[in-house]
Image 1 (cartoon, rainbow, N blue to C red):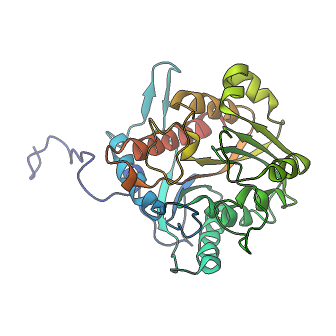
Image 2 (spheres, rainbow, N blue to C red):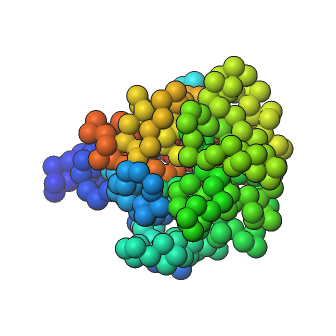
Length: 317
């Protein structure tokens, strides 16, 4: 027995201690990142057109992620017969949050971009916790000078507005801004459905600029394998996940919920297949607004999906 009465060390249950992502080490020095994956919070929600609250997404996701921190010896999946996230194989750190300057979109976005650039400079994969979907803009900006990649978006909304009343960097603009980048070779926009914030001309522009747009019903009709076959072969993929791509029955905690969305395994199987097609070089998960979901289902979904995705990138990549 130790002096604290434990058999060996601390039990360290999920509700004990500080809420870093998955209880992985916290690294506040962005010049000293030594990991395979680095988690960055981007608690910015000034780009929303309806309900704010995604500024609390990173805290909510981190807290939910402690549920999956038992043992720190990896996560065995009996269906795959693989132990994911083994500590001696996958190094993950949480580098905290980018500083957000209230009402200043450009400065806040610049701070997020700085964090992503620091992760890339360290040779790690950035895992960014939003924040509204506008935080994808600085994430993609940070890849300037890197090799090209194809962007895969899971979302209810197209987010392809060019400019509306002078706004170019809100949460309705990120996929348009990404499509303009010479190093983004194309977009697969998956889950798009119902009444959208993007008008018909936005859809026409998206297709003209290299987008393949697929709704949830179309996805289900064709199946996961056929959807994967539609995604252009690429050595590098970037994944952006808006939590409202999921059905609000399991993800109510978001600013613009849209019924008819995905369920968990549909997206996990798609992402699992994507990790086997090429390298996922960056991930952001956005629009989690915990205050709209008192059950915690949305933050749990976000944390579970990200940890499973990180495990599969490491295993299959």
